[in-house]
Image 1 (cartoon, rainbow, N blue to C red):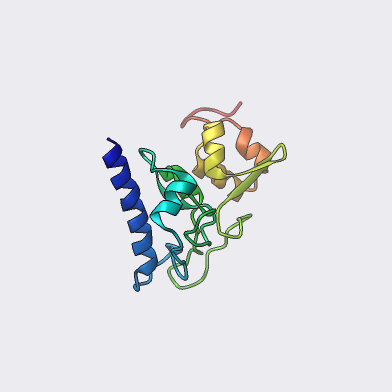
Image 2: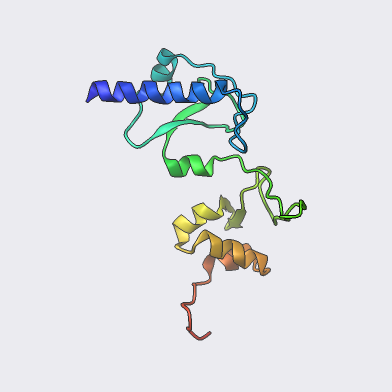
Length: 157
């Protein structure tokens, strides 16, 4: 078991190194100009061996793979840490996004707490797509996050 954990740690480090050294641009992946500044000992000493179900992640997605900017993260944690690229419409014009973070993720604020739609989904049980759709219809953040979802065919109160 210990050998398998060591192998998975080594594989994660090698995969990150390979992504940084790949001369082919990876469209929208955020590896342009990313340097790999890690050693195996540095990773193990900094964040320990790879836990089951996690992979190597950069804390600052625009930063380098280096001690202080790496962690073991789940797939959902990595998805929340993603660098988003602007969406482009079919004819080349950019799609407008309302109230987005500088890297493109939807932010919503309620009671002084600002989170992404996906994080509010986890807390409220209201799907992120529903929360974002409500904003597009002009709802306030608080109303979008607290109004219960009506089932299809259910009448309004």
